[in-house]
Length: 138
Image (cartoon, rainbow, N blue to C red):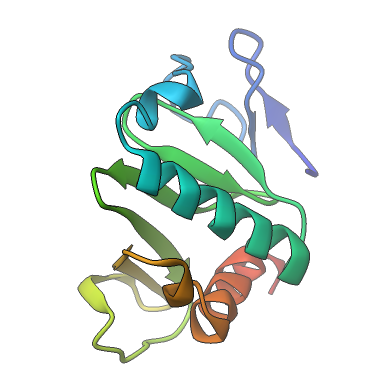
């Protein structure tokens, strides 16, 4: 991860100097307590990102699990029978898979979707995550 600033307290890396954040680190296992399917799906998602896109750093926070390349490109939430993820891209996307979308600025869109089975971690999703992963490289 190329960095411009690292917090001296929690050692997380950020693109912006003195970026506001929480230094609280939350054990990853706590996100998956009594959520075996979510743990399995998250593991499969991480493996697919690593093999199809590139290395991914996992930052486990109390709110969610951040997916980090050279910046946070997505997040995941463990739920009883699924995982919910979000990601950001520069262009509008259309899909019935999104349960929520937000236009954050003229060139930034935030998408939310839920994954209930490994087959949903497909080529389409990996394509969107690839775009998000490289969003700041553009």
